[in-house]
Amino acid sequence: MKTVVITGGSRGIGAAAARKFAAENYRVIIVYRSNDQLARDLIAEFKGDKHAYIKADISKPEEVKELFDGISHSIDVLINSAGIARANSMDQGESDWLNSWKNTIDVNLNGLANCCYYAAQNMKKHKGGRIVNVSSRGAFRGEPDMLAYGASKGAVNSLTQSLAKALGPFNISATAVAPGFVDTDMASEILNSADGKKLIGESPFKRIAKPEEVADTIFFLAQESSLFLSGTIVDVNGASFFRM
Image (spheres, rainbow, N blue to C red):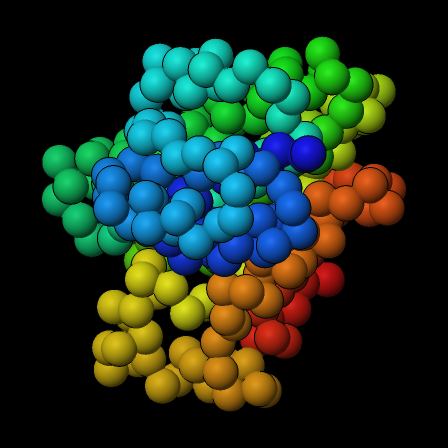
């Protein structure tokens, strides 16, 4: 049985990915930060007793190390779905600026990078694996009200492609998905705001992505047949934004 580790796995894109991989007979390990009940309820949906949920704050390097040290079997797939989106702009006061920048980078970039590091050590021992990072179209279009978020996702894209080069000799691929708005808790506040209708209308399909649509793309990238897509960043934004 193959094993997938999913950070941010109790909700949103991570939870949709967990359901997808469980349905395809993977052992699913979801990593979550705070909501114990949500994690328990999700794992209870899956057949069998091989699945697990682990509480960890990936912004803390020591907790990331402990997380991966506790996984004794091979990790076939790592999905980095954990992320935060905080207001972070040139209009903030100094304290708010420093805190929002640090908190965002610690989770979205530093935490993700540390997960990649420890998972890669496991994958090297077991002769291969797949890393799929969740990025954002915000990495390309600019995020003036969430500067740290846009910067972190741009860095995730660069890291993904560097990992593809570094880990390819070990039969480990690294890819990313870059969604636009997705129907998750993270997006609900802005989509329910005065600008929500305009944002939804950015796609010619006149809707935003479903978490399951992003999860299906993640699953595809995690397959053996997708090895030569390593280094690829796949846009999942319903033609709402194009990059050249």
